Amino acid sequence: MRVVVLYKEATDYARQVEDYLVDFKRQTGHDLETMNPESPNGISFCEAYDILEFPTLVALSDDGHVQNQWRGVPLPTISEVSYYV
Image (cartoon, rainbow, N blue to C red; front, side):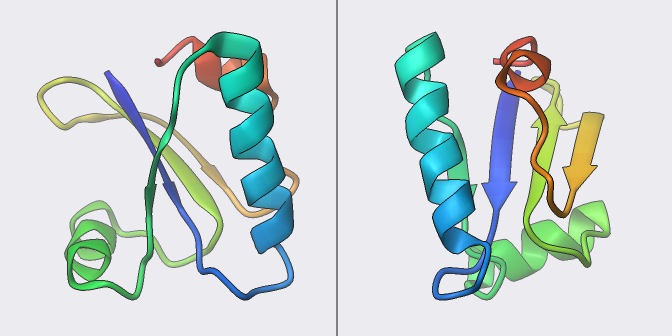
């Protein structure tokens, strides 16, 4: 499984997301994949999974099916997300 974090840099919530990523790494030892929704890959990812709100965390199975999704702030707890890593 994989978890993708979609967020735009230079926004009012970007610092909160970046702190979350650091805390997640420190507590679990795993990195979360990040993606800019305005990049070419990010645009196609958002279209494929119908993502319109940011930040969004998407937990995907190995075959690409959405297992869980968290939209906006507040961000989910680290324990909620670590299950999918």
